[in-house]
Length: 278
Image (cartoon, rainbow, N blue to C red; front, side, top):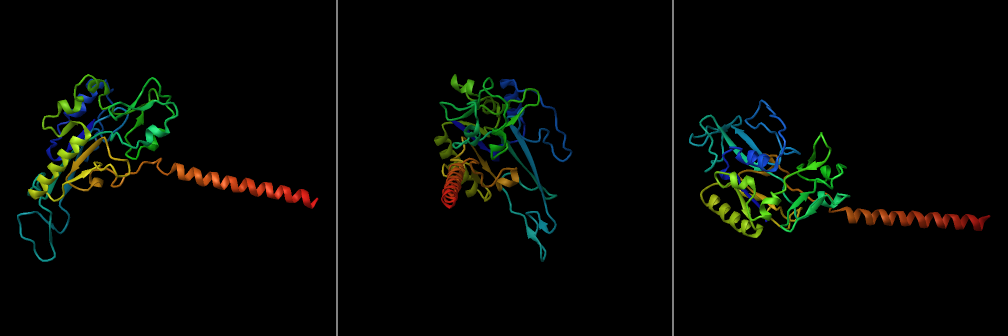
């Protein structure tokens, strides 16, 4: 089970953020008034499991807003069916971000206590009563999702409302979303739905529409939460090509073992040679 987030219909209402906090009793972490955006949470963290990003795109020098003919040397901004540029050359892209519940989960792999577990729904959950606050999972996450709270030091993140889906209910954020930007269900079905949606948008002229983390052959084995974006992932603050940070560990340890074995054999050879010489 997982999430498909269609950012093309996100209106930035933040109902998902509020519903997540209320249902999961996530403590208030204050308003981060950045002074540069309507976004007042800044990003995901131990006390922000859903984060609605507001990305304002502004016309660059030399660009021309669609609808006006370009003069010599000027370029025309790519026209968008959704999130159209206004008369002054700006538009908003909005996206509700969340833990990706990776198929290949580095946070789970590095946890020494088993606090992070894979559920029967394929999601990744932190068991708060088992977490010892070591923090190994924090740098392991390629998306910077998981974090520790200052008051108790334990790691926290989205559980995909494990308690709700266990009772046959949809997660609180999806339930609260008024535009169905956040959709919940079997991941295979969501992927088919997402592909169809991308095709519809591209056929309508939204050439920037693309899927992110839906591919099971990507660097994390596909996300249990994936997204339809209207621009490149990095525009939304997402890594363009995320990779499981523990993927190369077996190969690295093999190299270490080989080097250690060679060093040991060299030492033994030197010791034997020294005895013979004496």
